[in-house]
Length: 212
Image (cartoon, rainbow, N blue to C red):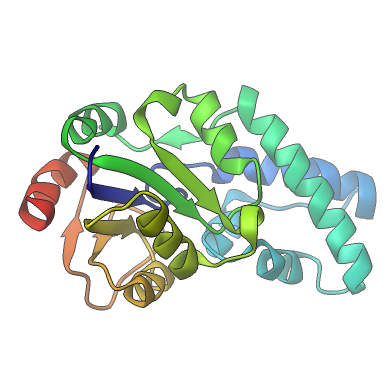
């Protein structure tokens, strides 16, 4: 059993799904809120990585709490379905990096997304065989720090790091007390990562240095 692991963020780290996600939310928004409702890929990029409740608050600020939950739930369900036939764009070198990392390390995903979104990523790109575990905010209500700790504990990992693309990822990783690697090719910045990669192809060497 592998006791060393690489734990991945999803959006901005493994793929860019801003185009199909914006399309799915726009479809629902036009139906529920009016034809003038439009979300762009740039709008989605600005909120990627936030908990879904915060995303809903930003996109639907004038709705009541109950309506916000209803509309955002419709958007998230539509998004999961849409992604199966309109997947996001994987970052270059993803398949090769996962193949090499999988030989030595336990691979997992931790995201702040809704339930079903990680599954849509895995199934649309046929990547389930590469990952040993995954969990998200939608599964248990925990943010990334808590879910990173959960992955570590339930899989008995003795050494691991988290790779993500934002300072929020960095902050949550510190709560879990493991190293943070910044995906500098993604959506955001980091303050003081333990390492940084400009592409997924660099991750194999970084993993060897950090995990052995």
